[in-house]
Image 1 (cartoon, helix red, strand yellow):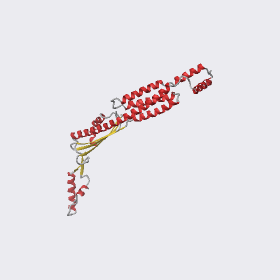
Image 2: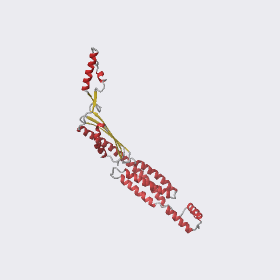
Image 3: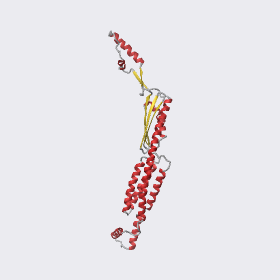
Image 4: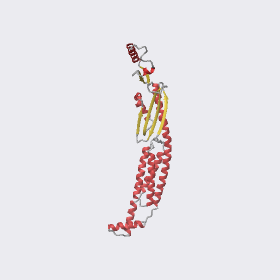
Length: 296
């Protein structure tokens, strides 16, 4: 089982370029890849996207690639525009001649650098070796991120199993209370049934009391809900103990079903003790659901 959060990074050197790649993964209902590439690498976006998709199934993934020319640390290198330099030089000599100046018009390097467009900034060609280095960097960053998601997934699994154990304890308490519920109505329910019959204008007899009590018991029966809860919790544990890496959607479905069954028991039960256990169970299911949101 894997978490949906993780981070990985890698620095790789190619022939003319070096690439710093980072992969960040956070929670998301579906797979959503966001890529930040230098513009000159846009032609490789499709292949890089397929590569990242091979590592992750769910979550929001952010891939960032920073590229710089080896040993220069920049993405473009300055190149002297020789034609423009010659043009500047010839024009400056004309001005010097017209002014009868004894010294050149431009004498310092800084003066030349101040002339507009004297330098062009060009990228170094991205060779097949560089593309391979980029691919390796993305692979290693994804693998590191994936390893972190797996480590966190193991921790999540322990937490989820602990919560399941606590829910099972609450469920056992509810079962025991429902089984120990006596065949005869309590004084409070005798009074409740009596008031109901009197309002309806019906005779309050022992036979009628037994019928109404049987109806109340049948209406309040929670055996089916208890059975479904047991099955849901067993299936939940089976998924956790399986080798399935992407199981978050299934687990989320079961948390919804667990909450639905506990809500039904809470609405049907006639015992205050059961209600207390239902409330605690729902709190545990909410904790379960919050953790499941982190599972891939």
